[in-house]
Length: 329
Length: 265
Image 1: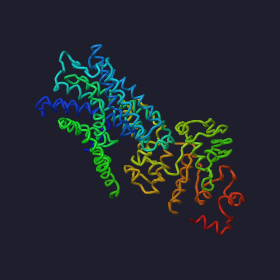
Image 2: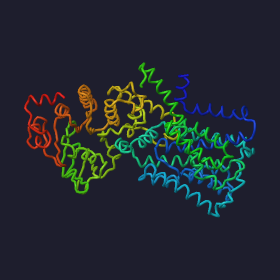
Image 3: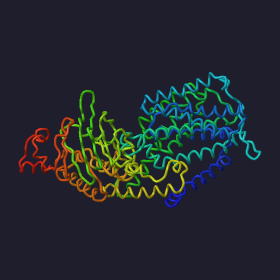
């Protein structure tokens, strides 16, 4: 097992190829109806958002509540490009990532001066402003939403049903996870954490605090934008401003907090669990905000590091034990 | 001169925290800064390292470059490292990550390399980690590398901030009360580590310290601040006989017997 781990660490790409093959096989083995495929695609999309949110919130420590706005930017970039230019996912995805990145710059600027709850308020305002702008703009089809957004076609095969679309969403998710792993395991990820823990002492170590806050915001905005585009093309290809409200934002936050802030796997596990719960509680629409709000509060109170914290603790204590023959606590 | 300040000034409202301080430090020296609480020692550090912006008319030069209005990360990049009185550890990061983030400016790959996550990066990360583990064993923390920094004891934390500051291979290291709260044995241990560091890395050091033993034994020269002004500068033996210093800081002149007692602490 240790040897296997070492090989994966040496060639991180190999691990993702193995994961790709396993995830390719899952639908044919486990899925029995279209609903499950649809949910799997949704999980993939939410994992992308959660992985991005984890960069800015979990690693860089910047409390942003406006991410759903950037997610909407991604979706509507894709939607409008389809509506006016007839573009397919292969064109709208990079465009959405790029434009969302620009919005990330705008969201990063308040973080230079604001912290904690104040930054949360500023970004919340930004996110809501984007949604209201879309809702009141005829260019964006206002409250009608954009419908019948096309699904991609590869070698003449249209990926237009939920069970086929999973094979689009899943690789995009894997690529996103790969990028987030690479960044967060490198010196850049360490610099993010240093900025989160103590900006003054990070600066004393030669870390450019503003630059890294900007990087974190832009990177995570690109993740959200990409996820938004994949979501826009998700069959039946319908987007509406109501899909980008504070409730969705709280859900995204719940994923990252429940999974474990600053823990890469934690965010992914959180996204899987919360997406399933979110979909199962759809009939209880009016209580959803309540449920996920409570989830965040209780996680922070009783399990501040989320599920990822448990994983971490288990592994680290064991490593320490093997090294010195004694427990730390 | 490695570090030079000219008419360094900083006022907080009406309080002149640092008032026209001229300071010169040649390379390879260990300099002590002493003075009563509120005399401007930490403010001096904050001004030099760029945390505070000095008042107009001040001039700071480090290694031949004007750093008067540079932001702290630029100063850090140039090779000036410091520790903080309140430590400012990265509490929720592992010990090894604390030290590795101190290495930030020397990391050989750039952001694009990091995003694409090529194999080259992982090899380089491995080399960095090995080097930092060596540094950790140098200060005696190698066994705790994977623990969270918040799980260390007070003495170990002081060693960790020291290791983090050295990780970036600075030319000048400024220590703000490195021995505060340490037991006598640990103070001796710290002094040994400091002397070995100086030899190994060719460091220049500035030490703020209230434990006189550290200042008297390790520093070749001492600067005394009081009310933001430099009131004396010279070898430790001269300083302890200086009338102005005695009045402001030491309290009374000590004879040899009392001095020995004071140093024994």
